[in-house]
Image (cartoon, rainbow, N blue to C red; front, side, top):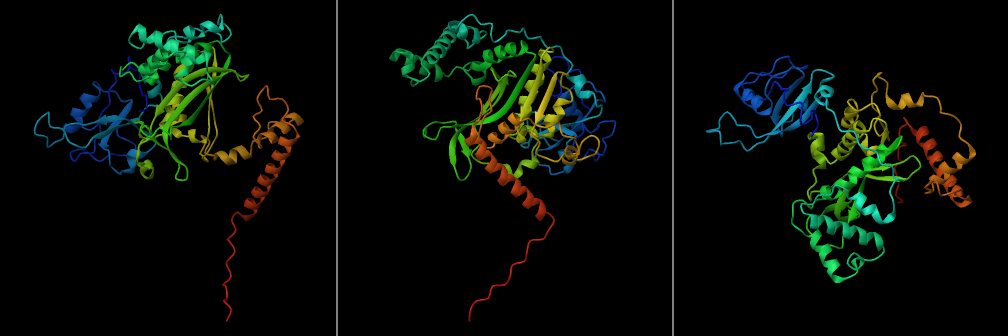
Length: 435
């Protein structure tokens, strides 16, 4: 769901409600200044908020409504309501269809006002300040709470043993059979506190402390596929891959923090999930962003917004590939802290604030400057798979040669595509069969 307000300071604001019922007037564009006064709207208005303000305009409509008005990018879906219908016999009788609640922003500063809050500043701790390799587990698990002190100690022991023997199998890395059984017992425990987020919560906190000790931090987000094709009896897995290479597993979207010299600072946010067996990709344009799988990019960026607000002395740069080129992500940046920046690999030729298209604007920009011979060699070698990390050294003649071959193919293809643009394909000649 789009985060429009914080948990402490915004429930005093209200939303004049606008519904799609028969007793309701037809919506106008732009929305009117006053909300709907039909009985249905009045009931929902009191259940969603309380006292009215004119900062937002809200509406609710059936989840399967096909009206284009509710799918405009200026409307935001904030939740659902199984509100009581007009024909309900009693308060306990609820309709089977769940309604969506949408809001429209009247004031350009409405979201910024709703999100006004003071976050605690993160206490910095440099990545080079730890006192030894033997104490890193204790430092990294500072603040761990699994519901019992014995579970906290067991998890710390598991992490320490795995660190000591990373090349061993999971069962044998604990030395004895008792240690392996205890590790499996912890993993299979039905306790509600043993969750993915609770296990990583102390690591998230320490990552933020290491980020706060830096001047500039790069936050890179991407999705990883975890394949478990051999675990045929395991429950909770979902489909991965494509039609040519199907499989079963999980998906992990993480926000990784790095220094400018490439040293990792840790994971700032992570989300683990399994896909549904039945895909609804064909109907994705009928859903809001929170109902799509691509909301992971927006949620990770929202986490970066919160992190940047807690360390005003650190410049935070969020990066993402073409899949993160989403309007909702750019919308979140409008209320972000001034020390947060983002670099997105553009996928769509969007319209800029000036009215100009993105591609034409970039083509008209001057070049940043000529490349040196070393920079040109690295860029060519990267076409052939060279990582160009700080300690990789020179790529060598073989990688540069393969990169030049690939670069030559790309140039020829681009010239062919440009020359054929706008031309009709040649007509096929009718084949004549002998005799």
